[in-house]
Image (cartoon, rainbow, N blue to C red):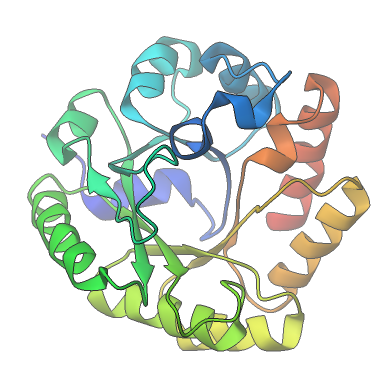
Length: 255
């Protein structure tokens, strides 16, 4: 008997909130973008466990590698991907892993990205419809990455665009929305208010000062965010600092 989607989601977000460690970056940016950083799946799994995160977001190859290491720690498998090797500026994220494959290795949930506002938005909507049908079939929660793109945007951090993308994600079937921080509490409060499913904030590029990372977490939680899915701001630090920072973030998210 397979668990219900609601039960799987509850295993990740026990109190409706979550601290997730994201580690899908090497696919999109390549290892040379993180020169000098140990990108081994085993290291990331150890940081996740010792930092007491609620789940880890990885691609299927990493998931298979760390499954025995992480034990009962929930795994969220990223189904879509793109690389930066192509010169196509209007890329989409294609399906590279099926929902069934994620389910079969014991994933608690799946994740996918839509670039809302992209010239190829319609193609990504079609791809998502396929993912959604299989997610419903296999009772898998969907963590949707709602990222604004397109020629109309001055910046992908435009508050109105982020607010719009998050709302559309909820409307089309994301169980949890992951999106960018708008940069201030007032504008991000509108994102949360208008998105009727839990909103997680992406960690973004590395922030040097740990206190600045914690300030962002405090701000987003104060306006109703459900937590963070953080990557580079954790595993680009040395192991001890990474683990300690995760514990501090967890204290804020689950306080």
